[in-house]
Length: 269
Image (cartoon, rainbow, N blue to C red; front, side):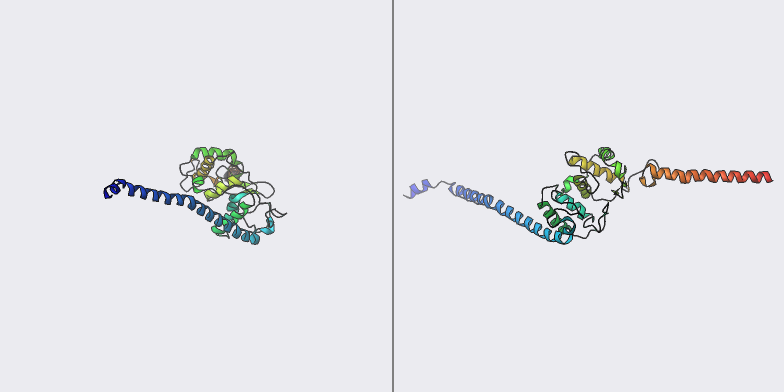
């Protein structure tokens, strides 16, 4: 009997049992862990929306309506997406101090965690552009020359060819793009804040946006050079023409007065 029992117990039997146990354990983890993680993610999102709703009721509802439906003092927010909130609140433009043709950039009053909560609530009102990841707006390795071409074609009419900004109509203006966070540049192109048109990925691809951000970073950095000499603020022909009139014409008048004075003095002598 002992010999028969020994024949039935294969040397690899223990290893097979161990592998089966590990497989069952892994299967159970695969079956239950993702569900738990998904549930935790859903719970965290729900909490963010709830906290965002509270912040919204205090700081935003008076202009945009209690449900984001909009009022005479503020547009509806359904469908603007989390990216619009992250841009407007993250640059201090919202909450606005007072209505006007243009809401200026000012000191940010919310923390990034609170901005994320506000964004989560507004995003729950309707699908819209999401907050970009760093990989989307990071200009490292982008094509600066291509970005300059895209910027001059789509943006320079309002923002000036180096992003210095410019005046529009009826009290509106295109703000300067110097020292603007790359994430906010990307979000502005995504959402089209205030007087700016939006440039979704169907118009300007993610790569196009990165190229534009890289161009702005290059022309506004301390290392950029002006081959034309004194750039006069980089504001274009208006400032250059004004400089020509004031100093050029003024210099000619001064020379003419000096010549006339010398001639009159020579005649008297």
